[in-house]
Image (cartoon, rainbow over all chains, first blue to last red; front, side, top):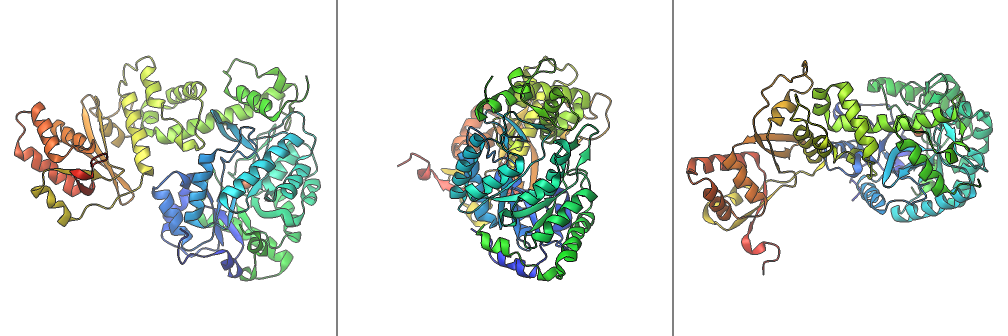
Length: 300
Length: 271
Ligand SMILES: [Fe+2]
């Protein structure tokens, strides 16, 4: 049952479109119901799926005041073994409880079902992968009764035999499966550096109408490669790419992620404010005028 | 060698991630990989192998916080890595991984100074599970009066209500987790402990029980009626006194662990 008297998708009309990731470090602060400048929260689905404990109660409490996006890490949509029915069942149950405006996961596999690595693992960009993922997207969307968003992930190697570039694959997937993309600008930048391509090529190749959400985060420079740690503020190079993207995608909800070395909530809010400022610079609207038409038409 | 199918690639990748420190990743995989940044091919795979071990170790460390505290970083990381590489995760949710860790500790060569480690781990797994269970409404004070009049009542406890017993004082150890110690925790742990755990107001409560209380509650949780439970306990403890029973009932009422009362005819399978 959806929570009664909670903000619905349409409340985005009067809300700023920048959200932040919901993390348990901030529960005690958020429990006091402070006034915040964030428009919505993104919750990691798995933290609330198999639990009747405090995390779920916190999510329900926050849902009373904010729209929620559910962002999973365990769907393993690109697994050759398929998507686990028990996972879908639990996710559907959480969806019915929380009434999220977006459900997303990653374009990756996470390990074998009997040997899960619990990581966002790279896939070969081949026709076989594409067919496999399209089939799974269809299955997931039917089970959940809504569209899903899939996120481009940071990778540290390229698997054998790819015949598509990452951006060609993402575009083909979204066009052919009916899912939309969660465009992580940090992951794009990390991959551009790790795999030696021009990020603008990727950025400009994805049509705006395929993008359902944007992620921003900070990486760590490991010396020999960039690592997607979500432990730092967003880097200037990533802000620049974001600025270029948001210029043509004014209605897409934006989220700032911070998962390690998590700062106090006001610092996270300040990072979200930077995103809003860039958005304002391009579109000149005030915070409260931002209308997420993309969301409203997505049916998610 | 031909193109790998998606399934073949994923099998090989999994093998590479689960390999031991001195084993090489499968050539069939490495021959086709393009490493990121300025990494070598093995190092690019090692990013994922290391990440996997670190991630699962962190998850075990969160669940088995006291085991980690008492064993120390070096020993806990060694144990966790051995466990992770020998016990692949079948869970989709990382927080469900590690149920077999107490048995793994039990099967390890004994820890002469820390013989309580497997029991402590068992306690922590139970504690984690209770954290995620739902809470119940306690039976009303009026309803509970039926206990004094009807002997053939079955007690239906809340889903979080659990009993735990160990040959060591694991709850005392758990309570002092995080404090400084030089190999031996600062608490008297070498005695048995019987515990009642339950959840209320999003918090987990732990009550220490004596043998008799534990046995009666164990019977009640197993579905025996109060009459059956007391008879059974009196057989093992012929000197069972009314005072002991009264004390247990004070605990039961005070904790609110009963969700509802059911007459014996409602027992599953009963006509
Ligand atoms: Fe992301």
